[in-house]
Length: 151
Image (cartoon, rainbow, N blue to C red; front, side):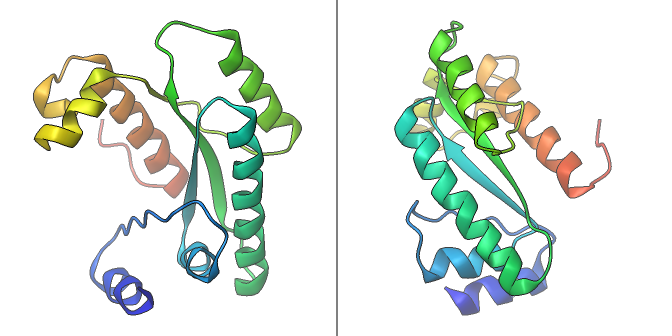
């Protein structure tokens, strides 16, 4: 993996690495190479605790590389209808000092369908809620990376 990350970094403006959620040497290395770390979490206490562990790995990587590494929690599989558990989870992340994206990936059929068809939501249903979720997430990530608005 280390060679692949280094090679991809030389060839591309953006390299996305999706790792399992356990603190290990690969995660520490990937975080050390990152400009931005997204920590996916569902609205649950278990995910709050796991996100805190992952954020600690990001802080360790920042210490090792002696540079700031931006990290944000992104809520996923949130219910379309507003529920108190989502706001409660947001409050728990904030109380623990875990910065969050304002964009969420809601529980949408289009995301599940994509695992079967391979067709992304913006192609399958460009005006749908899943496409809007992805666009909002992409816009927020681009802003964090300092990329110009493609508006």
